[in-house]
Length: 264
Image (cartoon, rainbow, N blue to C red; front, side, top):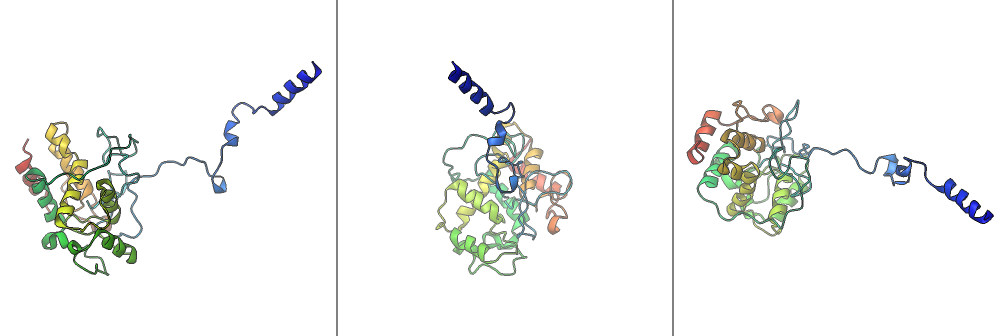
């Protein structure tokens, strides 16, 4: 009986006090908590400071940089725009099945891509490179593989790297290539650029617009959050003044072009 009382007393002394369980959780170096506060998906990269740098939804003060077609963390885990059924910017969702590129698209998507290219790439088209890049790629972008492009990006830090007809910036390009499961040996051909842009059209809500669940204005504003050369409904770039960004067409022109294939 004495031994039993002794064991009971020891167990009470060794038991953790209420609320002290967290004291036994591991901490990171420097005493930082194991779980840190979430960070924005669209934080601007330090190196791409030219006209096309990456982005998301309007912040309270200064806009985040455009996605150029934009960076995402945790591929396939959240939608670009808050409020969409796949989840908001910071809303985790179940991992998606292996993503596939959309098949060749004509009609609506092709026309939208033409409008975007008009605002972003100009006459250079699929071989466009951001004008602020001091060190250009060694070959025309359409003659390069994805591996070549990522190597050029790695070899030329401290300059803008928006590339192609839709001016993909590095984080956006990596995100889209990952979603499409493209090998790095894939050539950055016009067809590949179009298919990657189609993924961004879907992210902006093209399917929802066609289903009638969002308005054309909402869709167009979403596009303007992806491509800085497009105006939003204020008539200015969503990123107006950020690293020299400005809309390259009027809202009236943008609305007229989109309404040709997506009437009310």
